[in-house]
Each structure stands twice: as C-alpha cells, then as structure tokens.
Image (cartoon, rainbow, N blue to C red; front, side):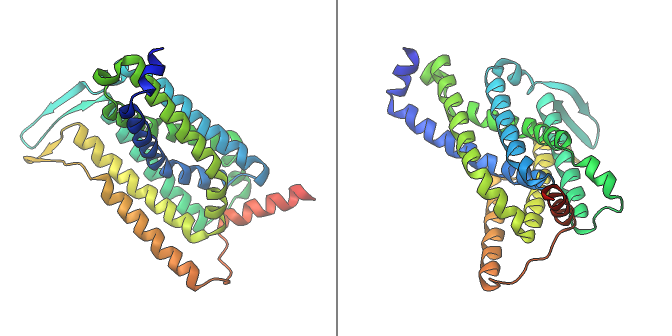
Length: 280
C-alpha cells in the first residue's frame, strides 16, 4: 500500500524519470566496456556474456541499495594521514573507487595494445579470452560502477520525503528499468562498436579518461591535500562533453568516408578465424 501511495505522487514520478535517465547515462561506459570485452568471444557467446554482465550489474545495484547502512559506513575514514606536505582521510569508498580506476586504466591500455599490436602466442590469447574470464572482468567492473550508481540514487531520492519503503521502491524500479533498456540496446551498440575499429579505440580511450576521473574522485573523497592544495573533483559534465564531441567528430568522418573498408584489429582477426573454424 505504501508503494502504491508513493507512485501516486507526481514528485515520485519526476524522481523516477530523472534517476532512470541518470542510471542510463552512468551505464553507457559500462556498455562500451562490455561490448569491447564480449567482442573477444565467438559470436554465439557474445549475447550471453552481455546479458550476464548487465544482469549482474542490476543485481549488484539492488543488493547495494538494500545495504545502504553498510554503504554509508564506507564513507567513514579508516586511515588518516597528516604530514607537513600530505594529508587526507582514506575511506572504504575511496579505496574501491581508486582500485576501480586503476583496474579500468590497466584493462583499457592492455586492450588497446592487444587490438593494435596483437599477441604472439594465439594459444595464450585464446586462454585469456575464455568465456569465464570475460564474464569475471565484466562483473569486476560492474561492482565499481554499481557504487557510483547507488550513491547517485541515494543522493537524489529523499528518504524524508518518500519514506524508506517509498524511496527504495523508486530506486529499485529505476535500476530495473535502466538495465532493461540497456539490455535492449546492448546488442545494436555492441555490433556498431565491433564493426567500427575507430569506435573501439575511442571507447577504450574514453575508459582511460573515466579511469583517470575515478582516481581523482578517490583523492577528492579522501579529502587529500598536497602542499596545502586540496584535490578537487572533475565535473562529470566535462567528461561527457568530451565523449559526445569526439563521437560527433567520428560520425562525421564515417559519413565522409562511407563505403571505405575499415582496418581489421588484431583480436578481431583472431575471433573471425575462430568463428570460421566453428562454422566448418
């Protein structure tokens, strides 16, 4: 009954639509990474990897929403550093964001290397790109992005206005709707990304950008000060503008060079060979 009363409020629908939109925006970088990672698998396994990845993202976000009290404790300092030139209060949340940024940087640079330089040992590459390893990497990134998503949801929906049950129903509904929308569009997005090598490299470059942003955000959450200068937060709007502008330029380039054959990336050649062998 309390849930029904909540959704009879116009403010609840405004909060739901706003949060759903933000969840989709925050999930775009997740879809890009998921598309690039799943492209290393045979074609018949790619939809399954995307579905498992996004389903895990939804489960992690809902689980974290019900662990809000524990999540809020992560913002409490666990290590305090106070020296003449460096000071800060490191929390569990900042550590998760920091290691998530490092993981994103490592994977992005590694993927760019594999796509451009390739691997000398194809057997070793095949082992690294097994279905389980790809899903595990996707899940690891889902955990990092889930924290950002949940903290955004908690900050947007007021418990005082809607009550605990009402606020939770709004946040869970927004998460489910956003993931369902991402599932519907993950296939077309993945096909578009995987058939255009420049989009793949741009996507990996965006992930490097997001990784750097996460490192700076971790320092900001820890209130780190170096020689008296406090590390500030990078506004996400700057990141999204850079991504949107880069994609716009690339779309114009694709339009002007329509009909030209794109280059084949190293791991794309390997996957194509695997698919041809499987079809024989």
